[in-house]
Image (cartoon, rainbow, N blue to C red):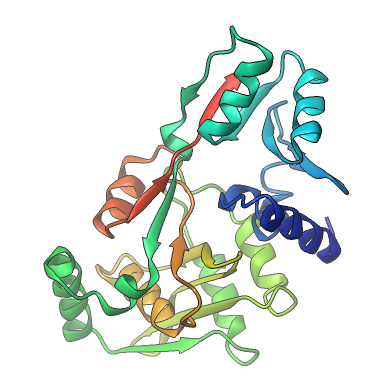
Length: 269
């Protein structure tokens, strides 16, 4: 993929009001290598092949989507909205689809995450208060002078179940400035300990990477909260993508109080 492909893909998404982060130009560009993606962009739509033979459901005109479905009999279709699955069912009445809970996307209210006001965020505020009370903490936006510290954190990061590998995270850092991403680094006792970064995917902010080299309680929450506080007013939602079926990640994402889930479905044509 190229930067031009990102622009073409996002123009198509805007045209057809498609909001899944999985189909955003930013997501496809960053995870192309990690997930073995093959992206095909036409004037009237785009589709994405995934390592293993599945396809993200295409985005485009009804004719583009119907042509894709009819020419990919036997293919597994993933990241379908319910309306996408119903379109397939119109063509193949026997088509069956299931909700793919492990790939549902978590969506948060940006203003809520920045303020953390109200009873439902009481536990998060308490965790953050303890984190700042027990540690010497400094947060700093990622820039040309400190991005090396984000690379250091990534190099020292040990993935937990469901967190994938470091290829996508490294690509986000490699292309950080060209993609016009934003991010935050948290230092504990002067040492770079955690970072996160993401970008605007059209009214929503996609958090594409969050890594730590320390297990200090509250670190992950602090880094994200400080980043969310810097986001511009026109960003109304934050999309942190899926939990990949990891119980730990699922619990953490639910604790942060999503305002909705982008439900997705899967099925074989």
